[in-house]
Amino acid sequence: MNRTEFRFAVRPLPFLDAQASNPGGVLELRARPTRRLLVWHPDAIEHIFRRDRQMCHRASRTMSPILGSRSLLWADGDRHLAYRRMLAPPLRGRRLALRHPAIADTVSAAVGALVRGTTFSLPEWTRAVTLRIIGQIVFGESDVELLHGFTNWITGELGSRRRTLVHRYLGRGASRSNADLDARLLSAAGGARPPALAALLLAGDTTLGALEDGELRDQLVSLLFAGHETTASATAWTLYWLDRHDGLRGDLVAELAATTDSGADATQVPLLHAVVQESLRLSPPATLAGNRVPVADDELLGAPLPAGTVLMPSIYLAHRQPDLFPQPRRFDPNRFLDKTVERTASAGYLPFGGGTRRCLGSELAMLEIRMIVAAVLRQRRMRCVNPEAGIAQPRGHAMAPSPRLRMMVVA
Ligand code: HEM
Image (cartoon, rainbow, N blue to C red; front, top):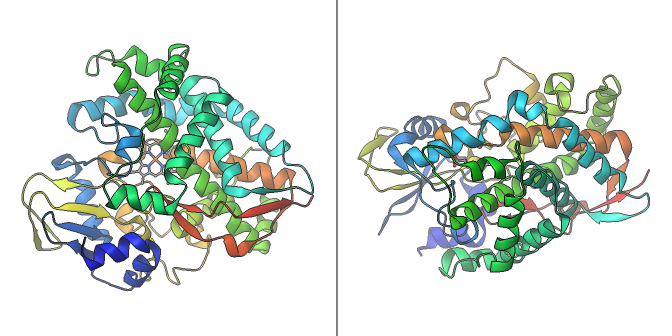
């Protein structure tokens, strides 16, 4: 590991912050043996996403032992396409709308359980709620004990910064889930009925065929993991930023008082939607999109790009470009209320990545965050008791608020 990589590994956010004013938008982390480039220039990002089909998508060293070697996150070609064709439609539009009542019930129960006068860890609470929601979507019902086992295993692997570094740079790799947890995941999938995603996976299709247990396990873990970790962080960050901006909180309460919508319909709560978008900009839960490796020689911003170069799109740096987001460290949802300004990956905004790998759950995630925040604002008054703990810390490839960040239910 060279000095640049070492600095990036040990103190990733200060390292990235130091690059934020670098207008080049591309940084070589390593030249040999495999060249690695951190990329955030909007034209370079657009080029990469447009050529996604000519890239291969390497498994992450930290995450592949956890998600498994056959996870759809590292699949390429026809198999990747078949997974997306199967799993994307139930996670958007009318099929997603059928799930609104179940999501609303889960959110209402979780907010209802917040008792006045108590304090709780905000990131742990949002993680529990979002895991319950994705558990229902994957299996059709939430087996609380199974989800508890799942979250304990993930927190054991990724909850400590030191462990993440050891996994990533000393090549020891995270530990796979144990045989008992895998067996329980497969058994829950066996009992799932449509429209649960596990039932779709079990039914297979002409390209995928019938999935072996090992491959099915990898997809179940991938969906549970990708489907709640980032959403949990984004929800916690949104509630944290609202705590820091009391006036904005008041405006949101007024917006919510004027509608009976649960937050599911973004057009009914435009300010809330903009608050979530701004939270995803300033505190993107995924700081990097997946690695891309061109299979043939190419060019990037006019410079030669040899095949085999590892490209790492930096969401964090893209979102902090002062020419695209003036005063980038300021939390300002107005940026997203102005509809004349484009907010796409090619304009520097990519919380959900892009190209052929764009997040499958983006619509579900936005909906969940709005619904949880709306329910909290309508039903509870909370105050952050230790705002100094509102600091980001790596959790795998995600950027989560410290678990020490606590809220008190005041009314
Ligand atoms: C705020 C919440 C979320 C954020 C910020 C987020 C972000 C991302 C990002 C950055 C990627 C990589 C895209 C790329 O490489 O270009 C991704 C992929 C993915 N996400 Fe999400 N995600 C969120 C919620 C969800 C949810 C709720 C699901 C539900 C199933 C989900 C499922 C996936 C899957 C399956 C992939 C892999 C897609 C592929 O490789 O084709 N995500 N997500």
